[in-house]
View (cartoon, one colour):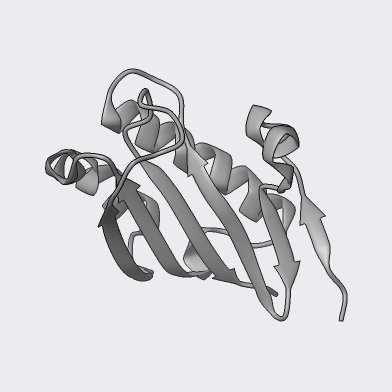
Length: 119
């Protein structure tokens, strides 16, 4: 089996020892991704941009995503992200889970992890 590792050069990749995405076993596994900005919506859009770049490097897009997990320290902020997520996934919504939990740094308001079908 061929494994392809995709790095975005993010600060935590080297510190923790992981890569942004791994293509293996017919799937693209994108690591939990946080975004930049002050608000949850800015961070959501930024995280999706980073995820989109990783998916593109793997030769797939958001229409190939079959599973998504959203992690937020405050679940009440999730609803503000719904329009962004709906626009991103459009007519191809993946199975989804939202978890309320602590993130690696208190400045982060949302972390998004996806799995896509590889081509």
